Amino acid sequence: MRELVSTDPCTGTVVWRGPVSDAAAVDAAVARARAAQPVWETRPIEERIAILRAYAARVKARAEDVARIISRETGKPLWETRTEAASVAAKVEISITAQADRAGETLIDANGVTQAVRHRAHGVLAVLGPYNFPAHLPNGHIVPALLAGNSVVFKPSELAPATAQLTGELWREAGLPEGVLEIVQGDGETGKALASHPGTNGLLFTGSSTTGKLLARQFAETPGRILALEMGGNNPLLVWDLPADGIEAAVALIVQSGWLSAGQRCTCARRLIVQESLAGTLIPRIAETLDRLIVGAPFDEPQPFMGPVVDNRAADMVERRVADLLALGGQPIRPLLRRAPDLPFLTPALIDMTGIEGAPDEEIFGPVVQLYRETDFDAAVARANATRFGLSAAMLGGTRALFDRFRTQTRAGVVNWNRPTNGASSAQPFGGAGDSGNLRPSAYYAADYCAWPVAGMEAAAIEGTLGVGLKG
Image (cartoon, rainbow, N blue to C red; front, side, top):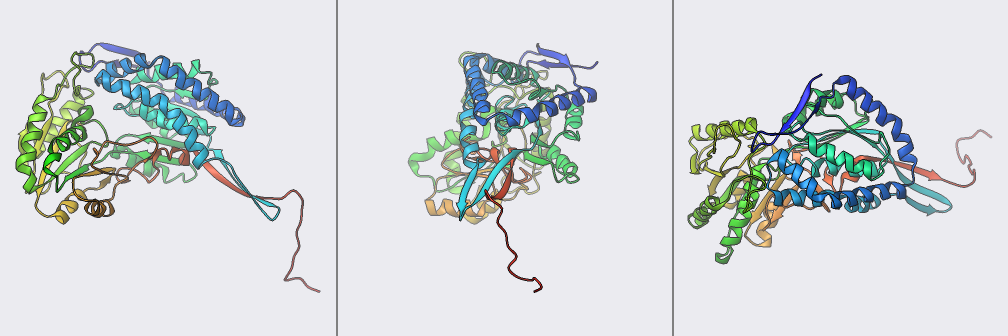
């Protein structure tokens, strides 16, 4: 039997090890979930809500354990993983509100006939989770799916199996019945077995655009199964008409947008588009701030701004992508440096690509931002839109009228003004267009894809006549 091993990216020490779920194990997990689902769906929603709230209470009680295991598996600073643990618990109440708002029961009396809209669970939903937020992002699918009455088979990232095991334990402690949430561990082969399993009624996916496109082609043959895709972005951050007293705040928001989580957020800014007249003041301040950022291990004191990327393979990929930019003529305002060849610690990089065309329209999932200087606002907006992705975009500075031009001309699921690109609220929908998603936004709108509406006309007595078209 193959073994899955999770290691600490900062030290290489083993965090978790266990057997890989092969095709037979996936079959068994789906079978258990299918057997448990009808009973779970028929339980009153108040009972399901009570179990979800018990789970939130368990997460709060074990918040430090949750945060520390995420840090050990991903290398993210402890301050950041503490916020992730808090988000996991907070998702429950947000989902309860969203379900009532978007997928509850509506009964309208119309002349003695009840016009009814109710929502049904799909059945068994597969969830494929990412490594960058190994607790929060899968939780964003799992909580609303369970609330709607589905059972779930969850395959976490092979880089964060211990986080999934811990959250699974917390669900069991909360009283979730056996079989309602199954966890299968493994790599891409396990994911393929689950995604293609005929016993599931849909798939909720967070990950790369490449994998998402493969899933979309696969699901084209089964239109009766739901597919919700959350994918990446080549996100633009536009800086225009900044007031003189707004430089420092803008620098903070730019750094947060581009380099938070070592650039491993799908909403991180990948392209910084700056008004030429601001560049002489703004760019040196950004560079100075990058020099001050602490890159370190999760439990270091003082706490680092960012940790490593998730593993050496990811670091190698980021280095190759930056080398491609430099080969095109990109100028490093701050180069990408690696502390040691056998560790995935990378410094924050800023590469000036002004005047260079042909840069790959790819998501560099690491601490790298490309800089473009523009003199014309329309050209800057065109630069922002020069991508096949459409997840997040933001503008710093300008008037409301100027932002409205940007907002209405930008195709993205999250468009912010004077906020970072990675500022998103769980109380709002979250998702993207183009290669960033299939227009099934998550967060508050997850209720929409976790249940399907059933409409009906209902009367207490049989009444009917044929008024026309009858022979005498």
